[in-house]
Length: 404
View 1 (spheres, rainbow, N blue to C red):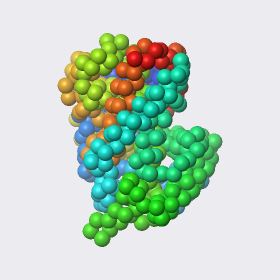
View 2 (cartoon, rainbow, N blue to C red):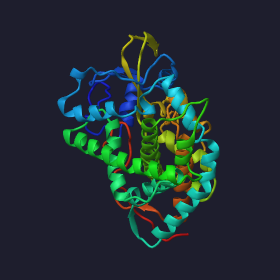
View 3 (tube, one colour):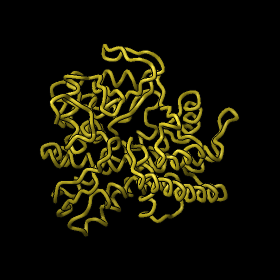
View 4 (cartoon, rainbow, N blue to C red):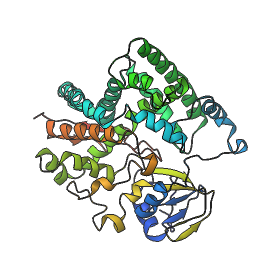
């Protein structure tokens, strides 16, 4: 680590464990000018303020001359498609979110709970015949992929191929891309669009009681999703609907296995499973940063910040801020009061649309895994996926042991 506190993902060890870097930023430079240009805020109150400020924007304006030549194919693809709700401000964001929420409701999530339990139990039955598995590839990915696939009512697909496309597409959320990653993302985008377009047309002919049918049919006050908006929304729900939850399950299980006293509380039913999930989300957030463009001069943490700045909120840091969480902020405590106040799903109008689904999946997948396999243990240290925004494990070899 350098002498001065810094948010620099290129520093050795930053991506494997960013939390010591965050601690120094909170203590010494909470509104920090990063080596990459943007500001980053690391304290809870400052991040909360920026995320909920209605004058900020999620749009980051890049002039054509600011875009490297190798990025142009990806930029062209973005321009040709309906924008994702992630990149829209009110009133456009409000309109699309309102339409989607008419189908993506707490009731629909609740109805998926029994199906999710069945999916998890069936997968655990299959895994019981194994000694060692890769927790990410064999479990953490399979659960949310199957859940969102079932929830949307999508036709059968080549799981390996779809996962490859999904991984290439989520890479585009990162601030740095190589030419090879751009090429892979553009190709994956075309292939995913073709798969989902066919699925939408099939569902128009064969409507059913599922989320995709609901999105096709949804209408409010004479308004509905057009074809491009529908494709963009389904793509977002499908990809985001499992990629971030993979990280929740992987990060959460790793945190538990690193704290034997805490995993024992889960195994013996001494903690509430919902609170367990909230604390795991707080302790090692699947999403580490979220950016906002300031449209007017703003005071953040007592510091005047000029309009037109791009400000990153360090969600992972805010979730461990001692000034908000107290002296135990860096501890894993599944009994923590108020754990659900974490910022892992953001806050304000852009609070994650799929938060309830991710919570439900994580709760069921993690609690049932550690209870079914009480001897679950790490075979070798899991790898980190080396992403700046979507923090997760790349590979995670574990020994299941004898099932209970």
